[in-house]
Length: 448
Image 1: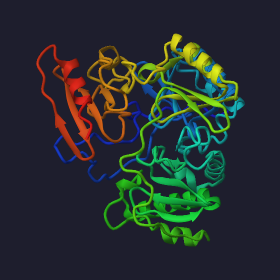
Image 2: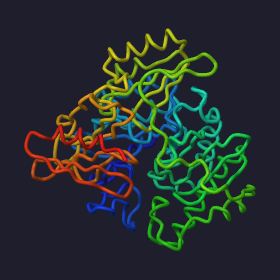
Image 3: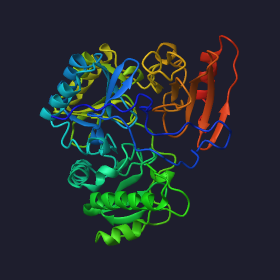
């Protein structure tokens, strides 16, 4: 049995994002030179935080069975603080784990197929369109791609060299996950065609059946480029100029036919909006329920309330849940039950679009208890028009949204800065004592 191996306590349990630049027009991260290995936490290598040890569980596509949901609820109760945290990659985190609980947690995960490969568990970072195959939009289910790509990653020895931050994004064509900063992105195009790209480079067209192998070849080409650069890059965007991924050559070497994609194909910028709380109707007469936990954390009791008739639950990269398999009456009943259990179930909820990092007392680097201080919205703005707002305990801004958002960050002086971020631009909004809530509400209304 493998022992749980904690990295040094100074390792930040974030998504590998460097601090955001503090000057207008310079939001993009600067070139990065890594002089150490990636110590991103996982299910076996736990991070030591101020509130105990932390495990991050990779859940490709955010997909769980009812049995796995029950296992996570048990894990939260038995080994953690009774809660499950949802990350911006649709993964899950357990906090407050005791010093001698790592092996018990690993054994529970093994028995429920949540740990298919111990050597590869940290590199199974795959986000996917959460409503794929459910609502009639996009180009069908992504399950075949998810299963094949995950199996390919776990079958190769060389993939363990990927960072625990390296991200695959699988989009069903609606454009919702193409803007989430994937290192390798696959986009379904219909008619048996898919697009594949690395970072923000121009995509190539491949046969849809070849898409998972193309993603694997792209990841291998990234490792070659990173090795040639010698900068220790963990992400595609960290590669220095002159060391870009040669995707065409990688696909040719893998025997995958490819051709340039049409000019500006459907890789939406800005991305399509995130799924909103409520119910989604499918073309086959079935319905899915969409709900989100306040500030991205659920109790074990709330987690159990999600179990659905279809036997599947999907965690979204926007810290929400999709539960498919209902008829219309059942969907409306379950939505009401989840609302009673404390979930966000209406787009106009004051908590819709509001997120926060761990903050104090769990994180030693945090300057404030952001979960205590976080304010819900005023309810005066339609959720579709309001920018997401994210409360951060320090300048690392762990887990912050992609795209346009309102950044509320704690400072050493006991106050918060409020910044509206859009692309590579930022606009800080000063405020007087007692005006923080109004300032955030004003910033949320400043979408493009």
